[in-house]
Amino acid sequence: QKEVEQDPGPLSVPEGAIVSLNCTYSNSAFQYFMWYRQYSRKGPELLMYTYSSGNKEDGRFTAQVDKSSKYISLFIRDSQPSDSATYLCAWNAGGTSYGKLTFGQGTILTVHP
Amino acid sequence: GAVVSQHPSWVICKSGTSVKIECRSLDFQATTMFWYRQFPKQSLMLMATSNEGSKATYEQGVEKDKFLINHASLTLSTLTVTSAHPEDSSFYICSARGGRAGNEQFFGPGTRLTVL
Image (tube, rainbow over all chains, first blue to last red; front, side):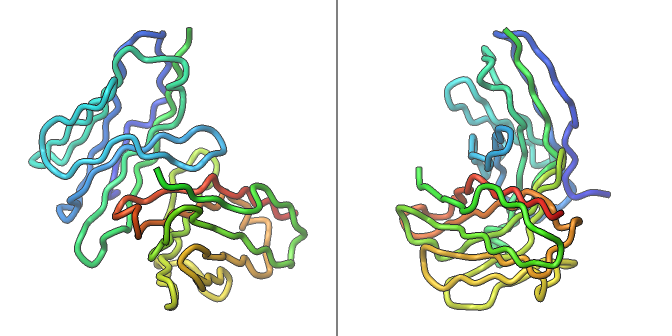
């Protein structure tokens, strides 16, 4: 079983739609949860970072973590064409492994006008 | 946020040659730098962790003699792909954390390596 499973997509949605991106993980040692956005041929940029179960909101983005189910989601409201990118979930185990990120496979999102 | 640069952004080389990729933290001192590899339509895979002034720690399956990492200063780490082969063609991305950047990792823009 892979440590991280991410809905592969690709997703294609109209502008203004609500987007839901999902990942599951199996490693109970994961403590920190992140969502990155990666445009084509660019490095990833951090969108959201959290370490507790529940919701965290930042503008049009909401990250949801359910540690009991080992499940995280990213919701994008009022999606824009500029949101078109690959979205990567990532985890960090903390402790001596702090800083070592494990990434999901990525979901390609296209928002069309 | 903090800025990380990579050079070159794109390199083409002949099989058997060595290629050096630089990763720089421009406005903070990076105590730790990470090197990732990303194949087309795949996710990032960590290759090695590099702490300033010490030897890099390589992930399982990554050949340390083929991928030489040097982290000689708090703002510069280099990855040298030695005796490159076509299967080494990939997108190499570094990240850095430390100093005023704290525990967050900031990623460079990546280097696309094509080995002919």
